[in-house]
Amino acid sequence: MRIYFELTLVSIVTVMLAGCTNSTDTGPAVNKVKVDPAPYLLATEPDGGLDVIAARESAKDDDAVVVVGRIGGGLNPWVESRAAFQIVDPSILACSDETPDGETCSCKTPWDYCCEIDKLPDAMALVRFEDKQGKVVLEDARNLFGIMELQTVVVKGIAKRDEAGNLTVIADGIFLRN
Image (tube, rainbow, N blue to C red; front, side, top):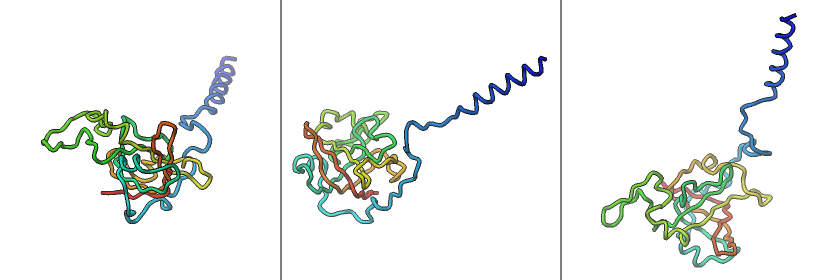
């Protein structure tokens, strides 16, 4: 009789565990299909690139823009599982950059620009890649483009403004500077 009880118990536990997985799936269709980066990658740097500060000052809603910036502006400049990230004007010193005086401000995450945080509000933009349906591409930008914090990128796209005047570039192309 005891053997039947043990077999029944093992069967119940097996059936219960069969439904459990270690999946990190958090929603529908996120990262299920690999996105091809080729349509977005630019072989040559587009002309007329403006640094982030200049683009924020001059670009109006729906203007075609080319913007140059470094990935950063916070501890985590990425929009997780999406082709979107923050860029900062190249004139703003990251915490690992050397100042004209030869000094550096060192911190654990130099891409958060903690040494010049007071300059960030007017020196940042959001970059967002959309699909043909106007939805954010469901692939992490780091994986899609092979980019990382503090890398200089040149993005081309359409300027969008929110109520506060913040700039978002709905990008259709990216050039990766070395």
